[in-house]
Image (cartoon, rainbow, N blue to C red; front, side):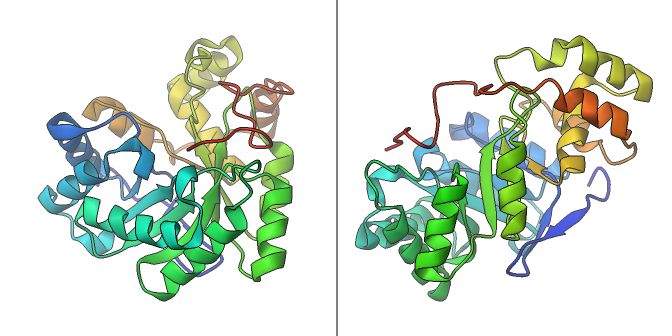
Length: 280
């Protein structure tokens, strides 16, 4: 392992690393190589999804890695087209079969799909999946405060994690505050602001230079100091190691404020507002 990575304790007691590895782009033999490299480099939290169609790739990497399964935290996500209770349970079972795994450490509802309006039913299935031992911890992804409040009110069970789009152009302050009020840890997808040239931003570049770090490391450190868990992706072992090497420096309050000031009212990468977006 590159270095000791701090842990966060979820509201159900599960301990997770303060940074994870995103797998959306990695499939097949090449994907297995990328993932085994990532595990060898030190990543222990691996994020995937049914709709990424790479659960088999991740499962193969887990089996090929010398790191024991119990030291890894594998997370997947339920697709929108299978929110109905019975379908959701079958999909989680199929998800495990795809990966050749006995359980997932984390399983999330990928999107709330409010127009379809079956996310409460999906959450009830997630609760049952945890009772059956399919999953150690259950959470959500892209849930707005109103979605969280509804599932908590109607089931009495609070998600452990809410994975949302979060990067310097969209710092999700209100969402993070609402997550924290419920004891939910916020996880960041696209933490480096894919497609917005955040790595070339002058403000971030200046802060990075002051600490002898790269812009990417500076952004990832910003995430961890916000209390969020970033899940960057990286194909090369060099970049994988670089992204992990963020726990030996600290941004000042002024530097944090400077990065937060980059946020925009709607700095989403694409038109994916959870209030209306439907992911199938």
